[in-house]
Amino acid sequence: MKTVPWLALAVLLLPAAARAQTYTVDVRPDLNDLDVKIETVESTTALVVRLTNRTAQPVRCVLVFDAPPQNKRRTKQNVAPGETRQVPFRARRKWFRVQVDVECR
Image (cartoon, rainbow, N blue to C red; front, side, top):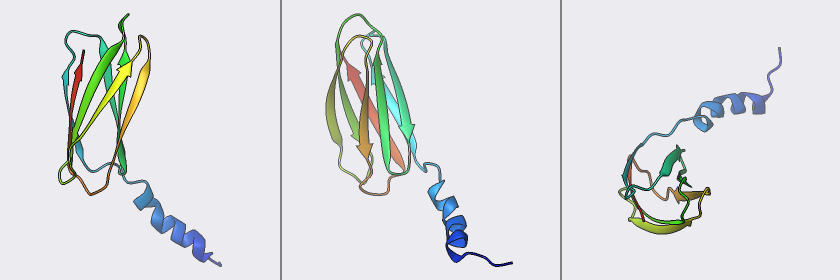
């Protein structure tokens, strides 16, 4: 039986591509009694935080990402009523733990 070299290489690389995230995410919300849903989507190259505003008013959320050894990153998002916003945080270095502070007003 003949083996195709590229097929064997693809099979060897499959576990590396299918690796799950190897870090923990700690979300610390301060929602001020607002109905905002926070979800995280983790991968090896980025963390995406989804904010869904389930109130009748617009909200402004400030997110602070802390993933040592990377520098902290702060970003602001305005989320309209019924809207979902995605906030990506990309890996520039290997991280093991990401803390995300979310404050909405």
